[in-house]
Image 1 (cartoon, rainbow, N blue to C red):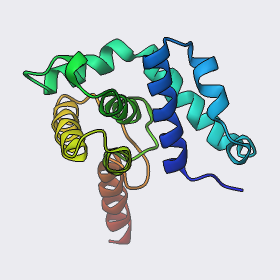
Image 2: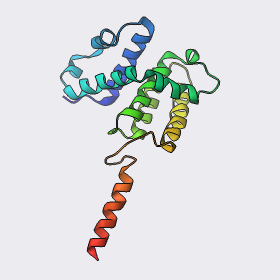
Image 3: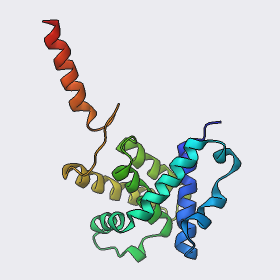
Image 4: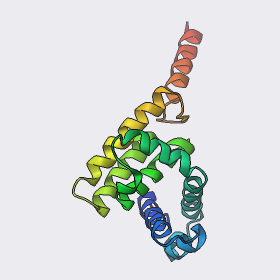
Length: 168
């Protein structure tokens, strides 16, 4: 049975929350969250572990982007849930070429609405991710390719130009 990525993302947030509150290592904090349904879906388990690992491996860089776009906020003042939603979405934006940016951002906003650490969490998450995405896109740090993704537009243009020139 296919496990939907939103459910996996929610489990990722729960694992990150556990790690932050208890100081537990990633494996012990996250393995208990893998339900039998998730365990049956090797793609879901792989996605779950890859996102967690990328956050762990690049936490300083990811937190740097959060800090850059929260201006007058100290990281310790950001609600733990919101901070981890931002970390997850930024990891997807930066390190998962096959996930469209809008999907990562929209999923983060919806999860922020569900977990609702404050009444303005979803707006906060949206604002930070939007600013960070625009910054990353303008600096060329987001490398996305494939159907519906950033670099696809230039490939489609060249394909249509190629097709058009061969038709003449």
